[in-house]
Image 1 (cartoon, rainbow, N blue to C red):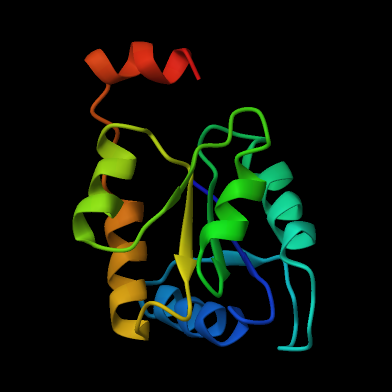
Image 2: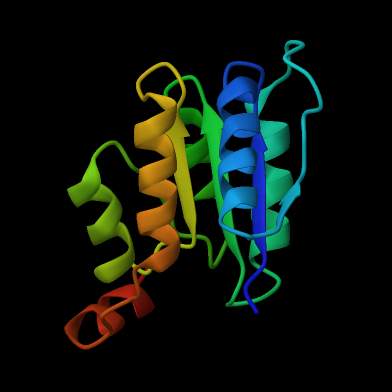
Length: 141
């Protein structure tokens, strides 16, 4: 069973909470690593915390939300065996899984509606890595 971890910064807090509600409607359990309010925080703290949890198992996945999705993506990718992808449309989301075997999706709360963000999360969670020619590329990362 895959574990889903979720975290945000203050800018992404509201969208993080909406994504959690969406996941609950899908009967999926996610582990919220914070923050617990929209009080100002530094996004690297939460991106590092999530990346450390995701990399403990190949089955784990993560969802990170900040204002643009960029800061969280950069920070998470500092960790070995983390492949975080900033997803901003259907194609970027699908390819992040198919070709890159991304294990963390990062979303920009200032760029995406709740509806789009939740649809990208759903697509991310339900798209499998193609393997094949992409596997050797992943191994080179």
